[in-house]
Length: 134
Image (cartoon, rainbow, N blue to C red; front, side, top):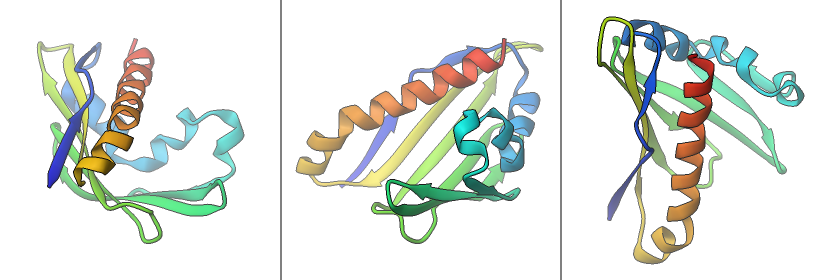
């Protein structure tokens, strides 16, 4: 069954076009990674990949809807297939709301085992992006 997990929605102190511009080119994300990871990942405009716990993992941007949505999919070798959605909507001329979602085919057992962890990771991502937008 297709399951969707959504982060909490956070308000950013930037308009949607600025948020979209800062997230849609993955090369701009590398500088925001923790120092210990920056040299361990390879980044292009559309991909980010590196080694983690003995696995080579990566994500690829598959779609960009200007100023509102970035869609990403895992690259070959990821242990699970899913779609990552980054959504941003203007709330005023200088602020926007941001939310991260994951859509994945999961059975009941997988959802029970992974659901809370996925939710936690999504909320952590939105919190970090909100902190950087101040």
